[in-house]
Amino acid sequence: MISQQATRWIRFIRQYGPIPRNDNMYDEHIRKSAKRAGIRPLAFVHPVEQDLLAQFSLECQNRQSVVLTGTAGDGKSHLCGKVWALLGGSEAQWSSDDVYHTLDISAGGETVKIHVIRDLTALPPQDVNGRYSDKAELLTSFCDCLCAPNGKVQFLVAANDGQLVETLQRLPSTPTVTRVRCIVEALLVDGQRETAEARVTLLNLSRVPCITLYDLALDAFLDHEGWSECYSSKVEDGFFGDRCPIRHNYELLKSPLVQGRLRSLFELCDCNELHVPIRRMLLLFANAILGHPDAKDRLMQASDVSTFLQKGTTAKASLFNNLFGGNLSEVRRESLEVFEYLNRFRIGHETSNRVDNILIFGEADENLKPYFDGLLRADTMYGADASYYAAQRSYVEGDDGDAANDQFLRLLVSQRRGLFFKIPREWEQELSLWELTVFKYAGEYLEKVVGPLTVGGRVERALLARLVKGLNRIFVGMLVNSDRDLLLATSISFSSSKVSQVLEDRVPVTPRLNEQVALVLANGKPSLHVQFSQTISASLPLNLTRYEFLSRVAEGALPGSFSRECYEDMLAFKSRLLSCLNERRRGEGVTESNTVAFHLLTLDPAGNPLDDVVEVTHG
Image (cartoon, rainbow, N blue to C red; front, side, top):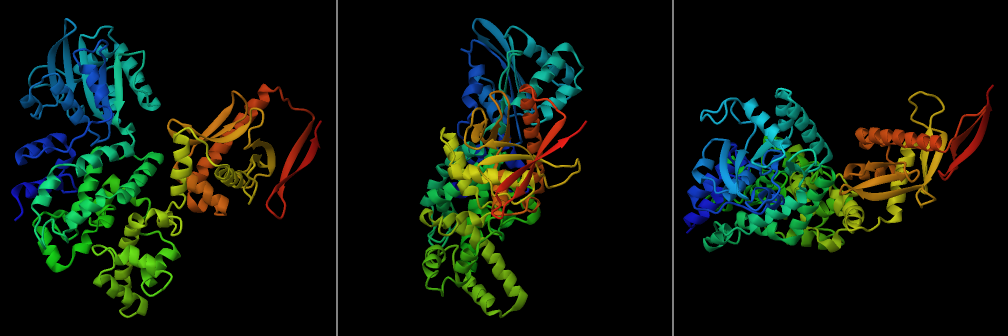
């Protein structure tokens, strides 16, 4: 018998999933729902929580107003509620629909008036309670407070990205408003928290790394006592029994291998500057465990399990497919950025001959059978079941035409997704794990670039050489094989020629005097750094897409075939490098003379660059 508490728990976490209503986006709705169900809400200590609470503690000696910014679902309302509770504010008042609250506290022998605006966008133009007569007047007071020398008034303002700046722009331009506009914009652009010019701390929640939120949110989700209640209520051949897809998905998500692979994807999102807010993380986990295309809202409830077991459709609940929104409609999936970001890796649609041979012929091939048995046959829930064997046989034998082919190709997408999370670490290299994504160099990027740089180490010389080779092919426009120097070349004409044969300079990869090409960590991210002198340099942030692009160009891919945007980025970087070179020459006192010497680039049969000096004399 399924207990009411277990049923309520599953119903509760469904609200975090991609249901049609938007209640799962708002902290206040979740708290009310948890209270009604008698369930502890999912919670963890946010990375900025301690810094925020410290600004509003009674012991704080140097009070500053705080602006919380970030995207929807980053936890702004939740953190505002933490401050309100710390100050001893009324829970009933906070639970109302009012977004503006005030409170007088006694701190350091003085009375401090606290203003909390937990949603700047929803702040009414006029206050029905008479606390302010005009929204612009209140926000002008906020600006005055930031520029005031004392701390008798303190604000906490929460606003989505861009809304704060837009609101400030609409305010009447007083001296303090103008000053605060510039300060807030500078803090947002520079990624800084504080400035000596105003009494404000800006906490941008969108700058918290995805992997930090992933670790915290996943632990809070998986370690909740609601799952223990589910185990206590298990029903054989039903909810949380041995064949229950909800239980199996929960246990898969707890496995280190699945967690590690999913974490790698979010780490790569960080490297590509893609932010996933907390609420979307929880949505992903809820959908991963409860997703099923035949369930109401495409999310299972406890009572659905026995029905799907009887129908033999539990394979449709595959966690591996749900992690990419495979259970959702295309429109719903594309409307949620977490699935849009994860599907940029094209897991399920990218593959290799070896992987597809295992999936299609592995059962009958002696060399491939160990992989087939270990990865598909051993997975009795989402691996090779009767429907898979039937579709596979029809596909191989070509029996039922296009319909059978389409069915098996859909199954292949799901199975490739499963392999990405099931291939053990000892088979990663052998089966080329990252070729199951569009970024086949992603694993190398994490392990051999991001990893070493993060701990203060160095990147292997061979990897830097490959990147330089890719840059040279783009900068010169020919299949250059040189990787010891970065070649800076221009065109003979002023046209937009893609081939540049006039060699301006070579920047060595191995340090020489004050010149060097190196991979460094800048603002926590890998960056390709080119040094021309002690004071002149230029850097290119090396995200995953750019790393993949340069690596593929070094392999022989045409620059425009992989990413036109990356190609334009590299040409813009080349222009910056040439500007640095001209700046160094001016500093060295290089002047024009009557004789101009050109270094014309040509390639030998092996692709090595040769330069012939051509002198031109003009009167």
